[in-house]
Length: 185
Ligand code: GRF
Image (tube, rainbow, N blue to C red; front, side, top):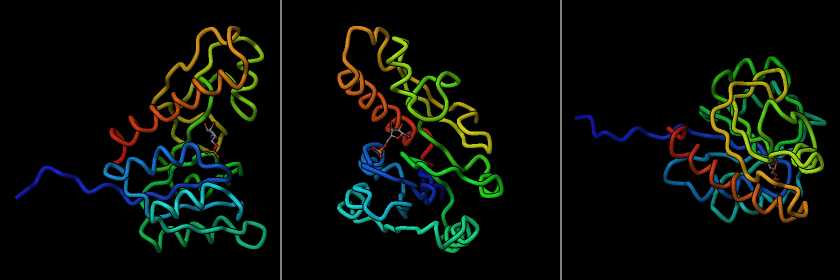
């Protein structure tokens, strides 16, 4: 008998730093099955946050290991989906191709505006509309199909950068919750 509940996909989250976006995903543990949190930075605070939620964590040393080896590890662990949450490394084309349509990124601007680094800073400096995008990852950085997008602040000229980032972080958290609900399965 079909019980109407689909099992969430086993998800790996890649981080590099504080884990502010990871936190939102961890709190959605009934919609997302986060099986592994991987960081290229062994001191990433996000690893502590993941441990506090009882998640498996892994510092992956990219200096001595390759993305191919990471791919094999993920397959071995039965991972079905990847979310990049503040992951600051460029991912090689063959890895992205292996995970086509199953790897997602959250980016702190209204893509296609402000791809790349310092996106929130540049949109604030330009007194432009600030926002957040969740998109599928393809080999070309920040150019995959946009899944969800939301404005964080329309008139950033009225707020300091840190005040603006308060609104942007809040929008990120909201968008990640919506993503987990709609795309967690
Ligand atoms: C967020 O701005 C997110 O949009 C971008 O990285 C930042 C999160 O970093 N991809 P962290 O989670 O605080 O390390």
